Image 1: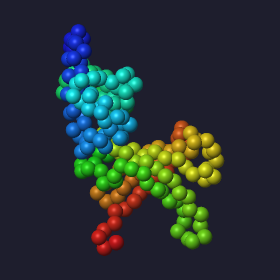
Image 2 (image 1 turned 60 degrees about the horizontal axis):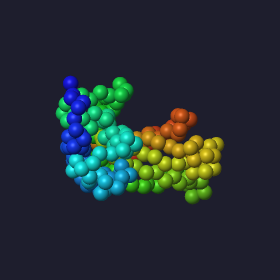
Image 3 (image 1 turned 90 degrees about the vertical axis):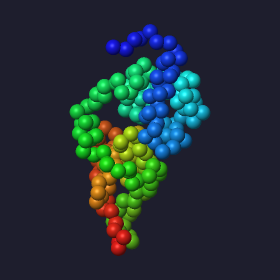
Image 4 (image 1 turned 180 degrees about the vertical axis):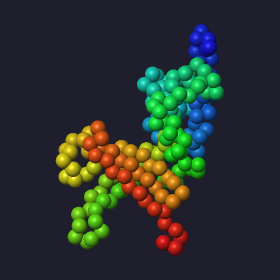
Amino acid sequence: MTDLSVSRSETQGVFGANLRVLASQYPSVSGLCRQLGMNRTQFNRYLSGQNFPRPEVLERICRFFGVDARILLQPLDEITQTHAHPAAEMLDRFLVPKEKPTLASGFYQLLAGAPEAHATTHHSLVHIRHVGHTTLLRGYEPRGTTSAHSPQEREVQGMVVATQTSLLILMLRRDAQDQRMMVFSRATEDE
């Protein structure tokens, strides 16, 4: 049981130590701050235990790292991890790659259409980012390629899974109106 009568400085220290452990999974604090959408100077204050975040910032940090607000009061090794959904455990066990992701975070252009010269090709811009063990995708269907008109209706989100031989991308439109799954085979040196 955790003693809830801890001082502000103790809370900041525990949070800073926990955040340093979580941030150590990432090669660059600057890159991590970009993924979090956070000012690096302020993030450094959290890391050093000088300050702790406002509730909405704490929620963003917790969602990003897949933890809850107990990181303010308890060391990470004392917090028992519970999966919010049974599928989360399956995803962690079976879909988390053993090696680092091969697809870098950033913006990508997806081209969809037939390879014939006269065929219509649709261009989509998607953003790929790594959150914990998961590689997420977000973008928008081009106007005119679907019956959806508003940006919310055209938004797609999904995940990317790297296997030994291929790259799998699952994309869904809001409220699962439709979905696409793409499989990309890895090219060999000869190809």
